[in-house]
Image 1 (cartoon, rainbow, N blue to C red):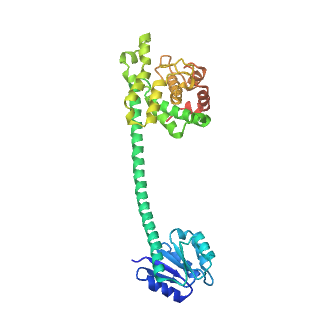
Image 2: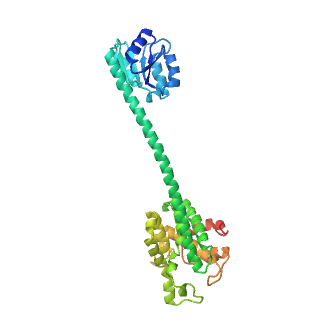
Image 3: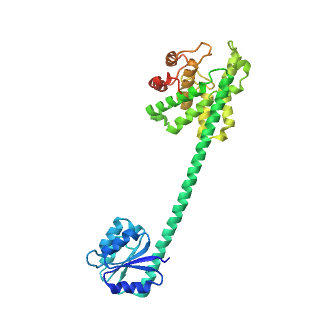
Length: 359
């Protein structure tokens, strides 16, 4: 199928002249005035590779046709060569300014017309072909990106399930509340979300809130390395045993460092901080590093409150389980150590969400 060229001129002789010199290579469509040309373009502008447009026509002239083509952005797809018998350069300047690709003065020269038509038609045909290839490749890349996103989401879900299982293994071994991991994750998500809303200076994004919540499931992973004789001892621990039990924080950080290649760098960083520092306290009285204030990464600070609160509510701890209301006041009063004033303010705000058992 040959490319189509639209010839627009109110003089039949001019239209036939152009047809005769171009019809060997192109299918020629004729319009005897601007109005007829616009009707044809409205239906076929994407199929027409070039318009040869006379300026001086009755009713709708060439400038009016150019203006409509520019308004509807047809010129981005279909180039126009303007032809005119005017000797003044004003018409040429105006035509080019309105978006015409070339300007030919009458009387027309056969060779020049053929060369200019071929150059512009070939250029735009190549551009159309290139745009189609790019569009096709873009669509293929978009589909591939969608597949990669789906795979990444499945990997994240799989990692999350693995993390939950690891956290639950620790809790079952500790003979504590098997729901502790689930509770800490939910409390962490609630507190982190409130902190992100109230204190933007921490720069917590929605994605980071979810990362901190997910990583919180591993906060006690270091207890895997603690002997049963200490972890399950029913009585009071000796100083050495207590010191060894506290080493679960640093041991947890070491374990996470060994498997960090599985996760992104940021997720690994958050996991490490939570495992090592979730027993630090705001006044420096915590362990293992005695960090003060915001020296403790914010994710670990959030988990420390969530962990302390749920431990108070858990049956089996040495002092017996507290009611959610009692646990809430113990956290605020400092019985579990000092926490960040900003985090405690968030803790107050989300009280009603914390006292309910998260499902």
